[in-house]
Image 1 (cartoon, helix red, strand yellow):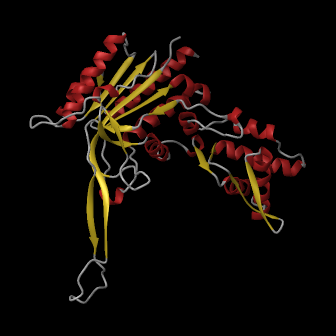
Image 2 (cartoon, rainbow, N blue to C red; image 1 turned 45 degrees about the horizontal axis):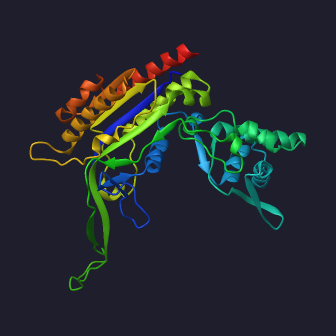
Length: 374
């Protein structure tokens, strides 16, 4: 059966940075192709994408992931009915989540203090608004909101970020949402060795010139790299969750922009590491997702004649052609946005366009595909 799959590939160079730290504060790494690579986890970049969605989509199209579900719902109840006191709104919110079985109300001297879930709950703003309205209706009619009603309200009007990245509720698995988007861990196309920045800070109030020494000393670990990044979107799954072709197109276009322009914020004040990709390649397929990371199984070794970006672009172009020829894979459509001569070889893999034209082109193709399948 024909599918609609969007594969997104990017090469991106970042300066000395610590985008994504492990539990010791060191930049995350991974061994691939027998050498240690810089790594940025998929979770870190997905969060950056979700945050970027706030500037690209209307709030009604997004969701909220929090343990402080009572506070969130109580705020909405008060917004719908300002006559409700803070205490009453909190109690109504607690009733909703206690009835659902997803949270327990913490009480102090017989009064509801707050309600928190045992893990992060991901609900769309529309779902939370619907639950707030249902809580007020239950208070008015005296008919409590039960678990079945909660499920019904929490399993409709899914937001774009929930549809993209999925939702897991361990205590209510029948309203889980399968992610339509998968994001790989970004890895460097070359080997890396982490370095240490030794820094000192001077106390501004040390007026006595005779008193020497720093007020503070420390070290920060960092590396620099050219990253290979990959993500894939199952457009059919996205459309099934959202139930609307226009919303599906908006989701795809927003993701492309956010994926290319977002950046994990680890130590960003220290390193000012925000860059844009050297190249973005999008392949629309009708078979399956294909991660082309094999292009960099042999680590890139820069030379005096060519740097990492140029050699990485050549390796990606060569590997893409080899894999697709070997398996008879032919993309339905392909777009390329590349910067300068170093990545010019990638322009042969698709329609060479500006990034805004790439986003529009993919969106238009998605709209046509969904229109034909409707």
